Image (tube, rainbow, N blue to C red; front, side):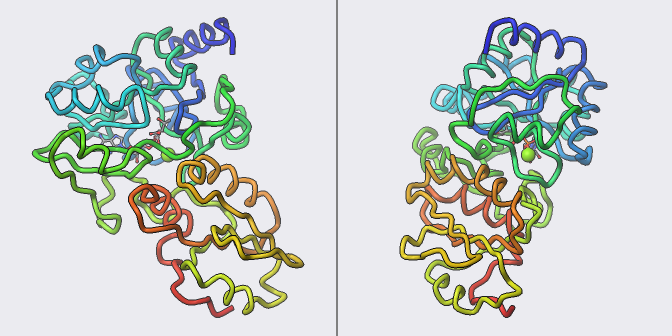
Amino acid sequence: MTIPDITKAASILQSGGLVAFPTETVYGLGADASNAAAIRKVFQAKERPYDHPLIVHVATVTQLGDWAREVSPQVLQLARAFWPGPLTMILKKQPHVLDIVTGGQDTIGLRIPRHPIAQGLLEAFRGGVAAPSANRFTHISPTTAAAVREELGSRVDLILDGGDCEVGLESTIIDMSGEQPVILRPGMITRAEIEAVLGVPVSSLRMDTPVPRAPGMHHLHYAPTTKTMLIETGHLPGFLQTLQPQDLPIAIVALDESLSAADNIHIEKMPLDATTYAHNLYHILRTLDHQEFKRIVIEAVPETPEWEAIRDRLMKASGSSARLSQPPAT
Ligand code: TXA
Ligand code: MG
């Protein structure tokens, strides 16, 4: 990545165009957050409904007050601990913030990403960059420039290639606009890490809450197009035995190290640590999705805090209704 690329990207943003750029979480599809016509293009490129608000990215904490009207000491504590980094805070918005950015809500999502290219772009542009993940609505977020190209092609004016994303899952979203902090979307910054900084308990929006404040909560968000199911740990060996020829070929995404591949049964052995698993997950799902599998079956991950964001995304990739406690009838 050269400085001229970043300068060009900033000038595209200034003239109302769209730039896809890497962040440490996933690639974002960026537009000038104060230009309604540019933001409309983001929704059109993603085919995303307008009631799903966008996160505004800025370079420094000093810019928070440009977008948020209340920046509490707690917000500053979190900013000091986790920014730049994979945390988004929902704050009360300044009156000038466009409704098309916030979905008409009185709040705004703000994040300072730490990827050097994102930082460089935000510094060069100076203003706020509204950026959802650079995928079409309901698809898996892109973690490489090639995945952005596959999702958006010519709908984006420029893609800044920063290699593969370090974290691999979208940021943790915490709503700091109410009386109590509430986690709206789990991410690799965990609730326990946030509680340790704030010194108070933090609640999480339940994943089955009916009103989706963070649309990541829709079933089948972040989903591959191949039918994808979750299976409880320990049930895979039995499941494999029930497979019939018409179920094949099939891809199994597993932590279980004892499984071995067979004809038309592809076993994708996943890393046993949550950080590497998260880093690899979307890329692997995207790669498997390109192949002709009848199904992708994913083994559930541990129910411990460091796996929470991964569990959340696996539920969404499969639609939680497809969660299997027993091997499926085929
Ligand atoms: O890691 C990330 O957060 C990536 C990178 C590009 O920064 N961005 C991302 O954006 O995941 P997106 O649009 O795909 O997901 C942002 C989520 C949406 O579910 C949206 O509803 C929620 O943030 N959100 C944004 N503003 C909000 C607000 N004011 N209140 C509640 N939720 C909000
Ligand atoms: Mg998204």
